[in-house]
Length: 544
Image (cartoon, rainbow, N blue to C red; front, side, top):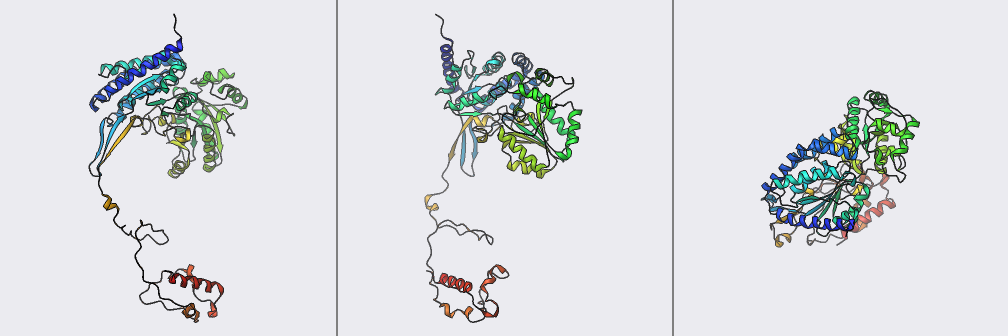
């Protein structure tokens, strides 16, 4: 009797989790040296298979350029490994003998990793390294449209781990891909974390599963060219980024914002470097195929080159065209040029000055891509600081291609292919996710003070500067001798002259005209306001 496919996939998923749990129990006893040896061997094998996996991914998905996918596979193996190689993740990872605090790395357990079709092999290489470095087991759930190349990548890392001495089951993947299988993995009580990179629907399902989740999110990165920028280099960086793997990296630029005073120079450089500025009719034709009727990205345009996109839209462009650019004035969820476009297409906004550019950047990020990435091209550090303090993103890049800077390839941001968007983007982390996100820390604290010390009278702090509030911890009040009773009718301020200040008293108001109202008015006249103020002062001295 032929078994139901969904039931088979559910049972297979349960077996994967069971095997991974057993393997992780063994792996948790490995030393840092043993773990590092396994991780290093996986990185070497990943890089060695970079070209084969890149070509398989391009052949199966049709996305991007296989030449760039080689670079991504090498990045996900070699550069990620170089960054995490010397991290302490096993056993005692920190020991502060001065403050008497010790920290111990504790693996999470079994991690479920969702794999996107846009980066189906590099994501597997990267997630394997960071998961095992933190002492975890990992199970991959590939995208159905990239299952063959993903399975090849899983085989590479799985074989490398076993060859280096890892237990059987520490790395595996779903082979019978069904939604029930993925749901079974995500909802299993033996799964500690979901590491989700992929479409918005799958990421939401991961969070809804009840299992702790770390995710990436959609990008919509604006690129602001400020008037002090090196304009030829800025345009080159943007085109380099947007054409890398045909724009499938979510950190890549989606819009250009330029100050009006330099627009002619930017326009010239765009044309010189192969950009094609579409007219209104061409922009409308392309806009019609960028999104599905439900407002989601049309998969038919993802990772396609500019020539193919123009052909699909029904117009022709020169053979040298690198990116398609559409001049825009509006931002909305219905305007695809103001949203994420995983292909070499850019919106272009012209603003009067950097203040207006700020507002446009905020409008674009609020529309989509909150928490992800923006890039600014400028030589003015003050502009950088202004943007850094206010813009709702967790990766702000300066003078670099955003696709490569955001993942840490051309910047010193942590190298990663899962880019967290934090609470702004509906996620749990704002980091470029690495091994330290995939372990818990047990803290050991030695006693360094007694309760008797906590009960000691508070030490009076050094007085703060004038006009600054002084805070001291609570202490029992000391007795104060009662002030001598003085009748307001005996106050010398009523006698027609300003009272003398005692020789041993320093006036706190000397030279400060804010207190001039205390002095008697011209002709020694006493007005109602002065009487009221004097009464308050005298009554204050009489208060117990």
